[in-house]
Length: 516
Ligand code: ADP
Ligand code: ZN
Ligand code: MG
Image 1: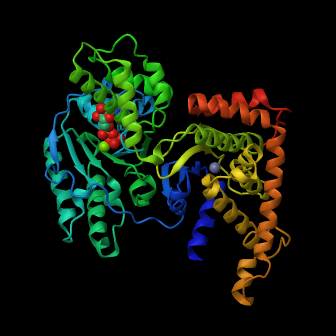
Image 2 (image 1 turned 135 degrees about the horizontal axis):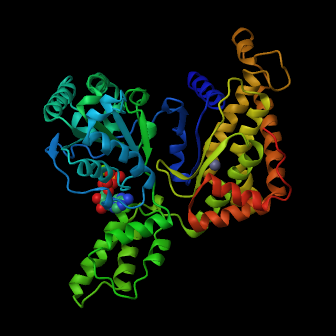
Image 3 (image 1 turned 45 degrees about the vertical axis):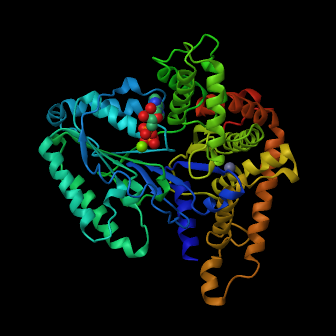
């Protein structure tokens, strides 16, 4: 019950505050467990506040023990921003930091306060470590690298003293980049017996971070694949208050990564990198780099002058066969994901024009998400009934689009988290907000005195059913827009909100009334 309340409050907050919502599509049945920990990312004005609303998964710490020997190792990276392809937005954010690292005094003179911590988040292999190293390389400052799991020790206090020792060393060095990989290992609970240790380590990190000043020229960069597992305390202002998403590359970005890594590799003229980029859906930068390297190895073994198409195809199939099945969607699955996400996007375009659609993507976003709609709601002090209804419809629109296009028997597990969230909103409307048939009654409060309100579940179902029928009707009316957008998504995989809105607007069967 308590968990439920937190969730409801969270959802209401999302609608009420300036919030960013990721509506996620959970990939397939084996990932069903992942639906239990949804990702809700809320952008308040000060930055990102992360709420892992439902039961936080207590995962095993990956890469345990890794990097223990290299603890707090200091290097001077030679790579620069030119070694990073794609990730334009991340690079842009880091460029300002480079300038600061080169000359922190300038920022002191202008009384500017730099972010102390930057958090890079995204799936593995997307270049987070590379970006951090490139920043240090660009600025020509030392790079301290360590992993969150270095700090998780059996003995209370060891992690904390390691943190203090590291910062002491870094302060002596002066300008530098401190990189903490897998910060989720430090920022989350491993098991209850270790919580003391974890808290101490985390507290030591936070207090060290609050102890340095703009003039120090020290930037802490942290990376995680599991944003939703982080302790929200890490993301507060003055901590890791700048968050940069490092997502999987889309088709055009894959091409630029392939081009970058084929420098210095003798590709035969029959090799078409554009085709390869189209083929390598859901590959990360690291897997693309690895693919080219495998092909080069095969070519070297054969040793007749160049890397040819066969080498690349072989490497491709090996990579796909060896890949985590969950990461590579089949053509059929991609189509369903595209339809599902298009449903969300069209419903959101029509029903909540005041919310800004930031991006629609059919690339996995980590944590079992097969695709996502990133939507930045307008800031609001009061949530109205119609906003909640629209929100429910937008959440249900993915499933509605699937049902309209594939029929009842082809429904997928992809909508599970959408359904859960829509149901939670509906329950809040019925139980707490008096937004069903009794505008003057809080069934929840009443339940505390008179036992649970009979029929509340039926009311929730009726409410959801009505919203579902409405959004289905809406999508049937604008089916052409749904289909056009899903085609475009299959082609480009990831689209900016503006481009999405253009396609929808061009295919609406009637024009959107100027509302909001
Ligand atoms: P992460 O830290 O996100 O898991 P890494 O930074 O360790 O990923 O990436 C591993 C390797 O993959 C890099 O060293 C680089 O060779 C390649 N790579 C990943 N992303 C990119 C990119 N955007 N541009 C160029 N190379 C990349
Ligand atoms: Zn969805
Ligand atoms: Mg890394």
